[in-house]
Image 1 (cartoon, rainbow, N blue to C red):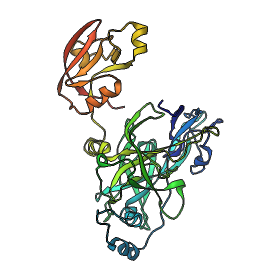
Image 2: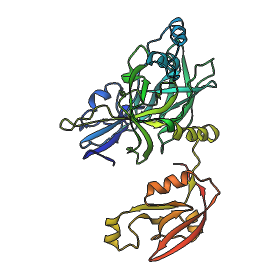
Image 3: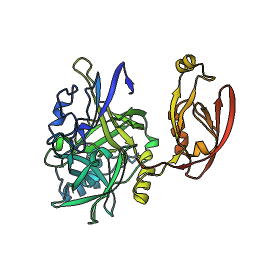
Image 4: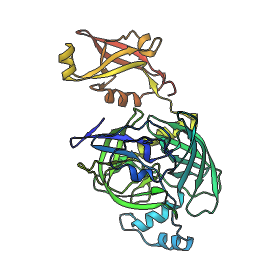
Amino acid sequence: MAAAMGATIVLSATACGLPQLLARGEQPAGVARQEATQTPAASSTAAAAPAATLLVAPPPPAAPAGPERREAVQSVAASPSGQLTVVQVVAKVRPAVAQILVKGTAPSFFEPVPTSGVGSGAVFDRRGYIITNNHVVEGADEMVVTLPDRDKSYNARLVGRDPSTDLAVVQIDPDNLPVVSFGDSDSLQIGESVVAIGNALGLEGGPTVTAGVVSALNRSIDEPNGATLHQLIQTDAAINPGNSGGPLVNMLGQVVGVNTAVATGSASVPAQGIGFAISINSAKPIVEDLLAYGKVRRPYLGVELVTVTPALARQYRLPVDRGVYIARTVRGGPAARAGMQAGDIIVKIDADEIRSDRDLRSSLAKLKIGQTVRIEAYRGSTRRTFDVTLGESPSP
């Protein structure tokens, strides 16, 4: 778990998608009110959270602005820098912000229990493709999408989802749909103004709009499913249950993030204005794979890893105090075929120095399936080189 200011941060998926968590007794501080947006919680996967608790958020509907109002707003001249006002940003993006109503079943001791939840998304393609969070649609048997300025609803189908990055794509029928445009999240600066739009608390009347700034960049947090999300945008724009999957937008009216989680705190250690969004640049290749294959195809080494720290190195008398220790190789996997074995410590992949499992994941993310890479690793006190041809990671 990532630590923040001395408090343990725990990620809870209760606030988004299917309301299946925190169904039993002990609820972490700051969670109970968010639960009110979801109908019967059904799973027992939630754990009582120490100190601070990260909530993955769901959403509400939106107060339609009439077309005349929108046209008038959009006709207002932007600032010399090309930036829009918050009103103009909302007029541009809000029509394409989807409310996703999810119905499913969750296991219980006696029989499956019906569940429902609400989340957000953004239509990014006129063929009806909507980007959202995996935790919004995970386990869904039925998904119904509504848009702010449409009186009709749409049945949605799952195109693909990726638990490792908490992203998913669903599709509705093409219907002359409004769409958002993706911006460049790499160009964001700390302190830059942003707007979050989503169906907070599932409130009737359309999406909720909140404004804030980019508080930090390149944050990482751990999710309840064991996945670690990287390259996150931290913002103080209010994000609530129901916002999950909705867009974080820059002042050009471009989507720069997918709102995913919010930190709350205990009674003694409150947290305010700490929300997280998946950066759109890290989301783009995931979306491309989901559209092409229905899943994300990742390079694969076929190893189980442990990050080497100076403390571990002293305790086990390892030859280096930084690197990635191979706890196990998968039989017949790429690393095993290249001659690597349990106990080897990876310190370099091609030109990339590897000091942690995060470095290794970042390095692999730049590579392609079928590509041969040169891996340097210690076996005992001897530094060796292995040529490993990367395979394709099996589906989760």
